[in-house]
Image (cartoon, rainbow, N blue to C red; front, top):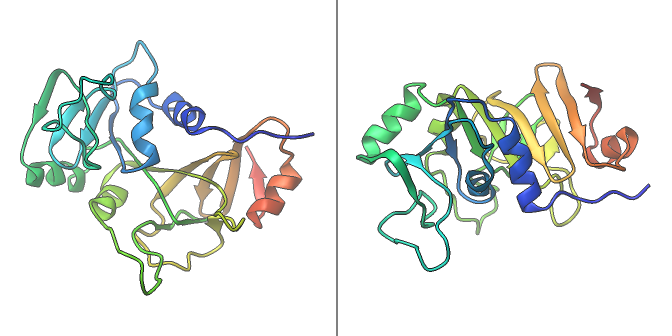
Length: 214
């Protein structure tokens, strides 16, 4: 049976579905920013950005962008009633002080036990980009990763052991991908769900690691 990958919006919807009422959440640069546009109605999610914003809303409508109001990825955002601006040092104090419930980050690699590599590929010409990732990965109560499961060359980004420089050790709780959702545990990967038509055996073949069923 054929399977269809989740689109970027569908993946963002899948991540947003697991947010809980009252959560304070940081969305990392790249794919995670799209989660802001798919938060479930009827619950309050407070979005944080490390450049000094608390209470971000969804992306502005075309033509309504204010480039004095941007997130850490320099994308224009909106501010909800009650939102606030502050110095980025205070923002990092929130991150390092354990005040964030969830952060959603991109990644180059995630190990089966939750090690995260997302700031450098180790290649000579690569430009390192740490940003606030290390502070977020260790400071947030839960670190979730949102990424494509495979590289452009078809290699799994979920690995037994990361070969790229680490951002954090054992910090990733969940991995949301275009093909499946996983939980990282001390015993290895647990499969939460997969796209329709993708068998457990085929997914294990793509990942190259054993997957325990949820």
